[in-house]
Length: 191
View 1 (spheres, helix red, strand yellow):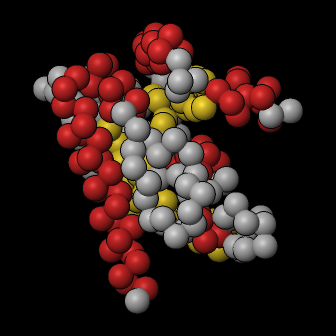
View 2 (cartoon, rainbow, N blue to C red):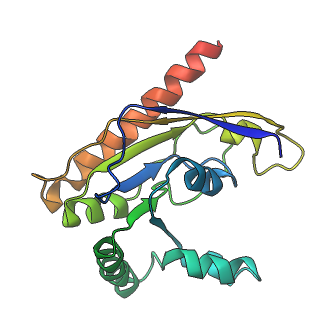
View 3 (cartoon, rainbow, N blue to C red):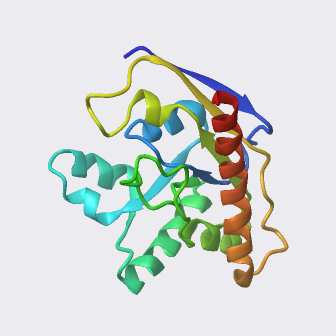
């Protein structure tokens, strides 16, 4: 397809540890990029409604922990399944914006709490990840984009060992700010 990743790693993942992988969500290619840049086993947590898409939905259900965000039981089931998968040695990946923003000019949407609640509950580090070029190279508008470099930055991890559930909003904003600062810095470079 003419895409090639360029990854900057501020810290290396330990293959014997679990992580909460958190990235900005800008493109249909984000999921594929996660599979390219993270070499150890992980599973996505994603919206249940995507499982209804013909053919895609079958594979989606097999590779994701699905959640109905309007249902408290579904959210609790995610916690249970996440614990099971972490016990199996897998990490978890969540795009905390909850989907690709409809507004193409939006740099980074607000984050939902789920990833941060899970990371604190299971005392696993947050791994903030910034995708710089995915929206430009492979956006949801089929008449835009093109081949080229897909730059990614894996930031320093954020420990959750001493955090309590009430710290999730602080953790969420800290993680969002790391990614937003990186995207904003990149935008200023281009001006």
